[in-house]
Length: 297
Image (tube, rainbow, N blue to C red; front, top):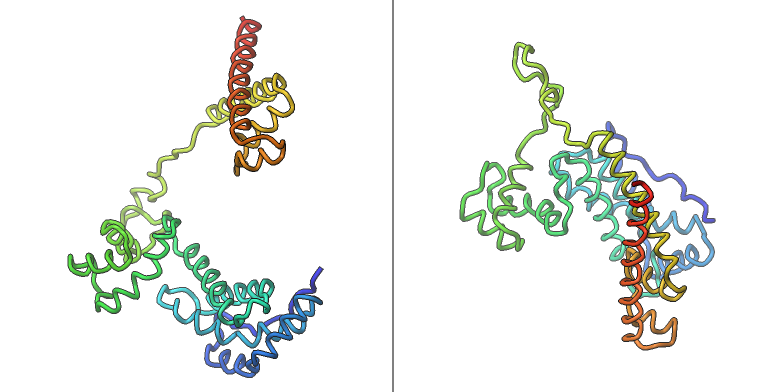
């Protein structure tokens, strides 16, 4: 097991950014040959000192990238810390034999780590889960700045069309994201009225979760269906069980080509076995369900 990397210079929440930048500038930049040898030493011998030199020589890159995310109102110390995590991941996975420099490879890991932190820190961006929404979130401020519309509330029709076209997203998504980013978070414990007699906002939230009785009933029904499935699977041959399981009961189903190689048969023959096994399984489950009903009656 690889030894942990030594601690990096720390930028505390109350720390001086200029002082931190001066501190990390003390670490020398690496030449291409130096970087290659250090990377090989880490990759082949788990040399912690080599990995540490690669990390510290790129702390300035992290600080530069992190500064680009200061507009989201998050502590610079946290942005730098998350970026350093991404940098260390990049160093661990860096392969010098591919021919490119560590900085080129690491910048993607650094940005990804910082962006994940930003998304998780902004309560109003819980909806930003798709690639298009993340792209919109991280580019909206930049484009608004170019359009000199940072201080605007709702965007003008011209600016709205420009942003939607550049980011290739619907105008409605731009409007929704812009309003989310412009709105402030409010505590659910805040009083609804100034005199505090109207209760708190959380008092009016509807609990949309299922009742415990409904959850237990669903769990019981799921257990019964699983039991029926396991029993019905016994009506299949070993090959039928394996093919049906690999094709229909896995998160990442095997292809017909994959299974044809396992059994040395054609893809069409695998498909026929799958269809036949599924029909047998359905019939077996219906018979077992009927038997259970008769037994209860």
